[in-house]
Length: 112
Image (cartoon, rainbow, N blue to C red):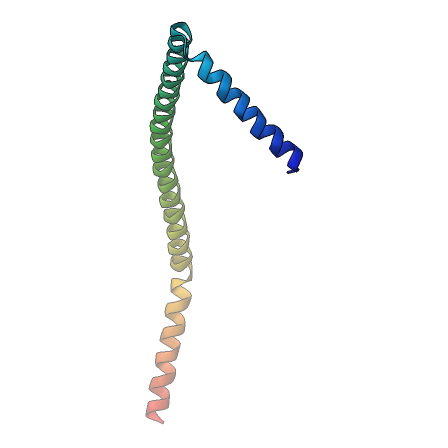
């Protein structure tokens, strides 16, 4: 920032402070200022309450989404297990035949 803008800001702050001090000396101005501050606090609390309600409903939605996600992966895992089991059942006779042949070869090698 330039020196000129800093000087303008300092001068503006002094002017606002001087006028603000004179402005708040009257009862009407003090009352208006208090009402403005109270309105700002009420608005802040309303926003905070709305945010908390939104956050609560979002956390419920997030929890429900987690449940749906878990159900999806359980179904997906079960489908994978079923596929592996079906593949195993299809290959089981061939696997048993290989085991039987290996045992016969081992028995023949042991006899020799």
